[in-house]
Image (cartoon, rainbow over all chains, first blue to last red; front, side, top):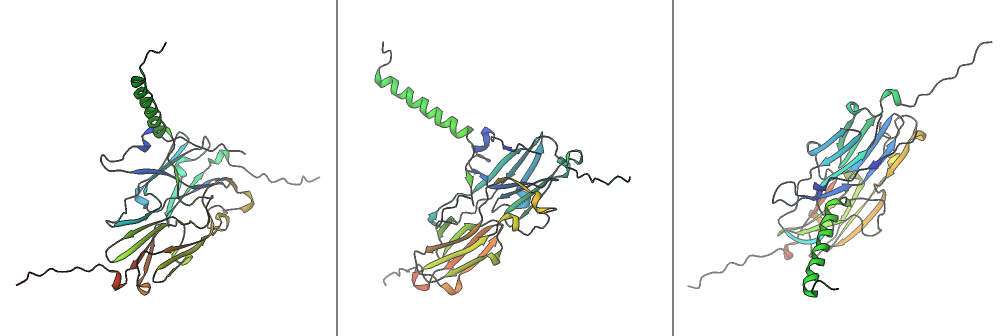
Length: 134
Length: 162
């Protein structure tokens, strides 16, 4: 079974500031997505967030992830700035056949893991072939 | 027939270009950020370095790693970060990808970087290597390198001449 998984274009407001006057950058996290047959497993690198600050929503076949990452810049002189710190946002168009109520997510060591189970009706089934008794 | 004077048309073109740029920034996807597969050797992990009065603070994003996976070595003027992140397939198999039959797993996207890394950073001032401390919280590594006494700022009190 093939699955069309596309990353949806984020809304125009993504680049906008979350709170007025407070600059917030938004990034897309790197993700691994694998199909286990019974569902999808998505892993996203979201360092510096917390389980409370991550929103995972599934609506109309689109799985959306938004993680708020608090600023952690020290009030000190910058010697090197090789990466920016900001929120993470990404969404995936999964399509039909997934069990929205069964989605579970876990955040550990800066990595968000999401399990998206397939609806039982569309899961691949293995049919055992019996030997007919003559 | 030229209807606009040159001095008049130019600002309009600039305005149009500016509108194009603005529109692009609003509609384009935000940049991918972090540990990607197209890792350039020698410059991973990216670090942010700050100069605090009493210490040099180095920060790097290393999601998925445990304290034991990172090797940090400090000398008076150099800091080395070393470690590796395993391939996802061998990442424990604790009910994630390899739930049932590992051969049935189909990868639809592989963007997260894996493998070994090593980065040497030269520190701008001498630090006390014996007191370097590191912590790894939610994938963010913070290394605090206290400055050696001779590189700490001294406050000179000015006395009033009597």
